[in-house]
Image (tube, rainbow, N blue to C red; front, side, top):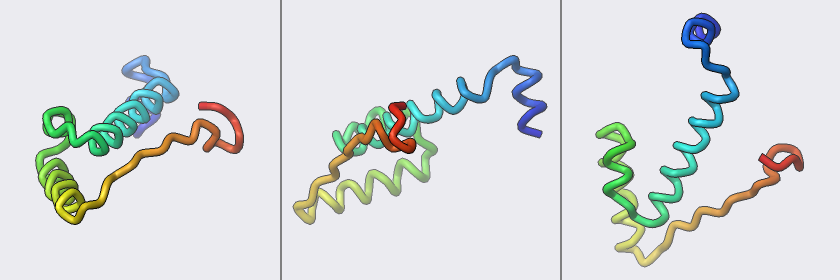
Length: 79
């Protein structure tokens, strides 16, 4: 099924994966920065609500969320 979608849309898998990675990265960095406006816009409603509540709980406990990027996470090859 996935192959049919890609062939009909003339979109390469690598483009889709690259786009999904950017969204994933943006959500993580926005969670770190507590950018609720971005998260509300780009996340599904229930996910956003749970994430916001959890981030508020983390802050209330005096903890911080830190996102660290490892550009060599793919067997030593840069992304």
